Length: 68
Image 1 (tube, rainbow, N blue to C red):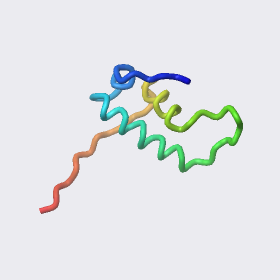
Image 2 (image 1 turned 135 degrees about the vertical axis):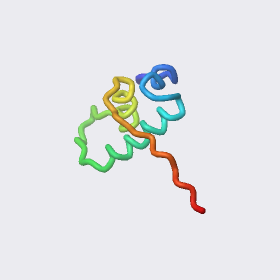
Image 3 (image 1 turned 60 degrees about the vertical axis):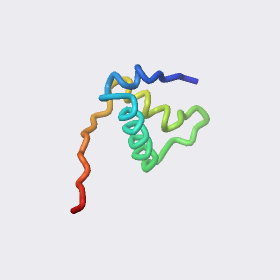
C-alpha cells in the first residue's frame, strides 16, 4: 500500500486540507466513469492522490457566495 504524507500532497495545493478536498472531489469524478473491473485496479482515492502528487490535477478555488 502506498502512503501519502501531508507534505507530499500539499506540494501541489495551498495546504494539506485543501489537497485532501481536491483529491476527494476528483475521486468522485472518477467514480462517474466506467472502470475496468480487473483484480489489479487501484482504489479511486489512491489514484486521485497519485495524480495530485504528480501535479496532474488542475483545480480552481471558487469562493462561496453568501446569501443576503
